[in-house]
Length: 209
Image 1 (cartoon, one colour):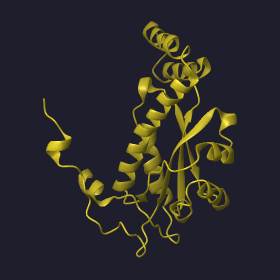
Image 2 (cartoon, helix red, strand yellow):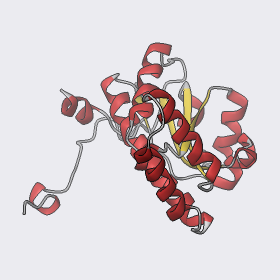
Image 3 (cartoon, one colour):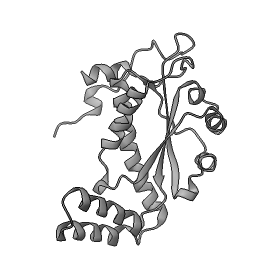
């Protein structure tokens, strides 16, 4: 069951650098990210799969020296669009039309209305909206990794501007939002591995109305 896998997962603090995530398991996690829902189906972010050890070492230096970034076999970087543009929205509209049998008044009207709402807004407002979509995808990635029994650690603790520079994201109209190292927990040295999973009491967390 999914909940059993979610109970198994935890924010891994020490990964075993000798163990690598297989291509098949990585693909399952990336597919889950691809299938994650986003507002209006825009998927306003990209995911970079970083395996190059030199690049990951540079990112570790600007991410509080968190060792999972280099000890895991893969680092996923979620990078949101820096803004919504007419070209970006039109690209989604064109793909929708191509894959769903052609254009329609309903399709065109929907995305025209979307552009009328989004394009006049401040770029930072649009970036924050796009970033929230990336968080949805992160949730799917975490669940998929748990199903595959791949360890992961979601990270906000890094210098986004520095990561953007390392990966050349500004030139691509992207801004880094989240890091997700993937790998396997080390047998020793992880203070969190055997601790009980603690969550708020159900009656303090969920309300039925």
